[in-house]
Image 1 (cartoon, rainbow, N blue to C red):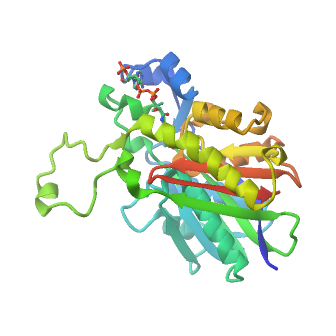
Image 2 (image 1 turned 120 degrees about the vertical axis):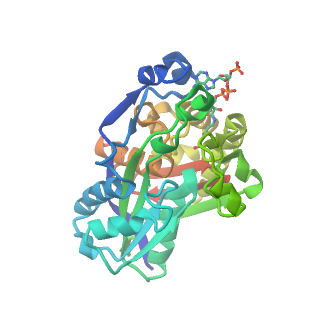
Image 3 (image 1 turned 60 degrees about the horizontal axis):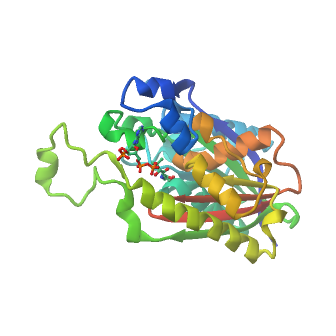
Length: 333
Ligand code: UT7
């Protein structure tokens, strides 16, 4: 049987550090409020003229490919998760493919918001298990700072999000000991408008765009924070348990849980629900905020680099976000 295995991982975060103290100069907020409600101390914003969604992904991918011991030309497919493409279309995966000299191979854009990386990983896993591809690059990359309303009006959303990119190389293996064990994907569109950006949507009157005025706010992120929070703390434990049940495992078998970095309070709540010790849950939201599709590969990469992911470990990835979407992946490293 063919399975898939993560053989290389990399991440890139822009150098521009935005502290809570800096945000205090833009809006009526405080380091104390942000820290208490979210755990975030700082986040990164891209540098205009230097970083693009595709270029950040390319940097992360180069590291992942090198660590996998292969070259960009060995990659035979790209799955790229983002909700913040450089162009409205085509997606940044195509530009990144060009930048890395991988022209000709297929590129699949995934738009599943905070669960985007798990959807991307799951998709790549199916392509490998079916025998269609052997070496897939799976990417999550976001530039969200451009879209944030950093006036008082947008403060409930703006303080949370940041920019960054992460990537993994997924390769075919016949070794059943070290592989992705299973992935689990869910969504409930009932809540599509609880966390969304309405425009530029296509189903508007032509006049809407002709008359678009500068203070039109339908292009801002709308988030019903408490609704997202309430669903997240139910869905995270549920989808982690689903993955464990599927494989006949228990929460205590997990060596490291890498949750989507949505909010430190959410991660902490999930950790307590799963009765896991602090050292078994990866958190780096303090440094990067919520980087949506990029948060899991960035967190997994930092965990791996610091020696928290070892051969044979049971790693659980889990996410929840806009859509609503949620998902998990269980990996025997
Ligand atoms: O990946 C999924 C993405 N999203 C999430 O995971 C978000 C999940 N939700 C959350 O993390 C939380 O709901 C937030 C952190 C967004 C907000 O925390 P909260 O405890 O739900 O606060 P709230 O929205 O109920 O606001 C409480 C108060 C309000 O003032 P009043 O009405 O009590 O006077 C807000 O106006 O805090 C005020 N507030 C702020 N104050 C200072 C909202 N944003 C800020 C701010 N600084 N940045």
